[in-house]
Length: 290
Picture 1 (cartoon, rainbow, N blue to C red):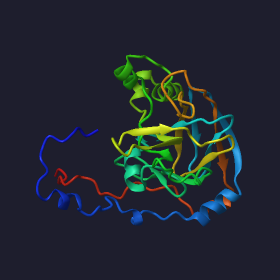
Picture 2: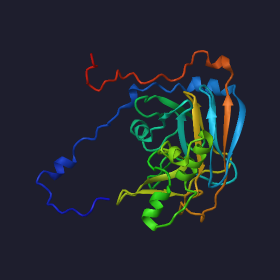
Picture 3: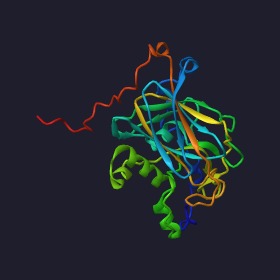
Picture 4: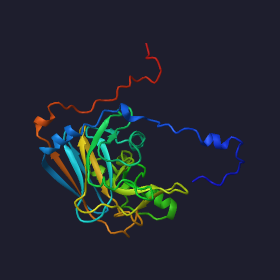
């Protein structure tokens, strides 16, 4: 929050505030979302396996490039925190900040989840969102945000001196450690900012603080993705439940989430290739050593 001003407005304050807003990253140069192509690919897909994510826990899953996966609400209103990595290289992971800069604060059909530098390529494309009807509400909130980082034990200890171990950061850390065989401390370094699936969030109009409200998700709703590269995913069923009141505690009613993996008919992928690495030539302006 910005504190009350201590300095007098300059004479040209109104003129300075009236400067034209410019989109920092115009995204019309991004690869286009071919809705017809994705619809054709998904029309002939078949389920391969299913993963249940228990309440206040996390689970990992693998998605081969060219497959679809869905995160599904099954029993009650529940928010999920999603991490993604390249299945064969954990250094390449979901970059929520750049995804936000390219697509906005909340994602839906046609948006892509981008990976970290130096890779910066689409990891997954959102192909269907049953909550797309929600749009923006009167509080300025929407669903599926890339502004919240994930609930974590460090912030809890900082703000209330409580030590809660089933927040999303800890859940994701335990799940990745189990899947990868890494010690907890090593796995924790791989956990990163999330896509808050089904979470309804925004910024207050007065102090511009991050807020959450009851998720509109109901059993049967899902968010569907197409894997543009081989993926390792981890999903936490947030201890906040629908995030209508609190998180990082056992107070909220929580429900499981389901991840389903689907394989398209191979003939629908004949003209498709996994996402290519970023084209930047590298070097950062330093001439190569002779």
